Image 1 (cartoon, rainbow, N blue to C red):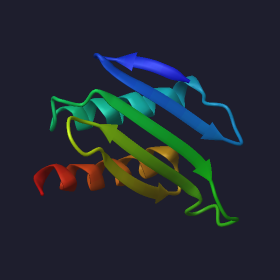
Image 2 (cartoon, rainbow, N blue to C red; image 1 turned 60 degrees about the vertical axis):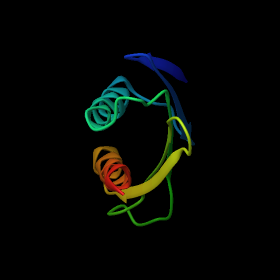
Image 3 (tube, rainbow, N blue to C red; image 1 turned 180 degrees about the vertical axis):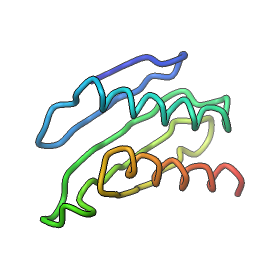
Image 4 (cartoon, helix red, strand yellow; image 1 turned 90 degrees about the horizontal axis):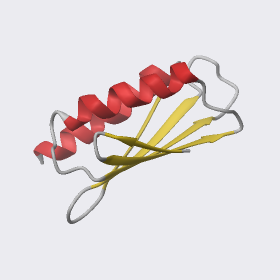
Length: 98
């Protein structure tokens, strides 16, 4: 699904399930949080997938941010989508500093 959040084109892809309004809210919240650290983001691609049989850590988030120059990529995981999104966004934040 394609969304536009504060002039950032976001493409949300879910594998094996449909996104819910609550999930979209979590993704938007994390994107806005990341946008506080970088104001030149033009696109965000978010891929969500449930992997493996371990319910404690089976949510995988892959996140690509389109910025001028080289795009940034991070992967996170957790027991919930919110935890996986936060894990990936923290990894993106560390790339902003480097």
